[in-house]
Length: 273
Image 1 (tube, one colour):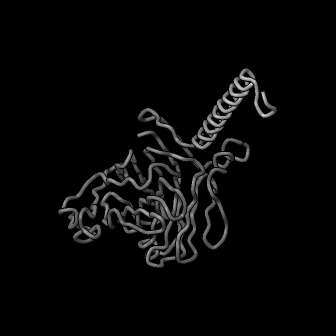
Image 2 (cartoon, rainbow, N blue to C red; image 1 turned 180 degrees about the vertical axis):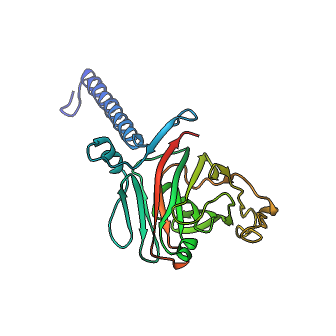
Image 3 (cartoon, rainbow, N blue to C red; image 1 turned 120 degrees about the vertical axis):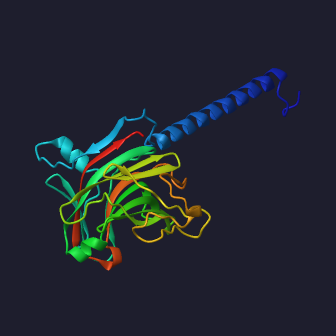
């Protein structure tokens, strides 16, 4: 045996130690990977039986109720010319400049059945007619979300913002069941299940006008109910798979540059569809 040669038994022992160390390292890496996956998925929404209550907010702000404060703290609030504030059990969004404002809820949802009451609380009639309120869902960030909009004249529209690019999934069309005027409340409802999206105003399902193979969604006038795109076929369900999960947000937009108005939101309820 030379100085450079180990006995057969020693070589065997060293080999076993090396293999054991490798197995241990692989097991440790696997455990760390499992922990990372668990942490990444910890905040991901899970499926629930149909009708299960997932979230509710009345925006109550009783100073003696820590629970009310905790729920309200989940909503983005800020002051300024454009503001989002919770006062007297109502979420108010005020528009003082040309643009939009929204308040997002710090909670993720996948499939959902969400409804909220909304009204125009302040503004000149011509401003209110063009002002838009929005129930946003599967919100990722300011450049990625779906928006179900209602305008002050009773028209509704469905939009998708993807990587900052706007796609109108169904253009403006008047909903006869929508109420107009200051103080009139409307109930907006979205049911999103997989890639199927349905929309309601005051408990009435909306007819939608997808673009189909055409360049854009097109109605034959604002009040016609006649869809010109999509082989002239309306639909109660939109199919879109851009987003699977995300937050809920409530928004307002200065439509056609109409500024100087305030809208209110109350009684948000989210169930499993």
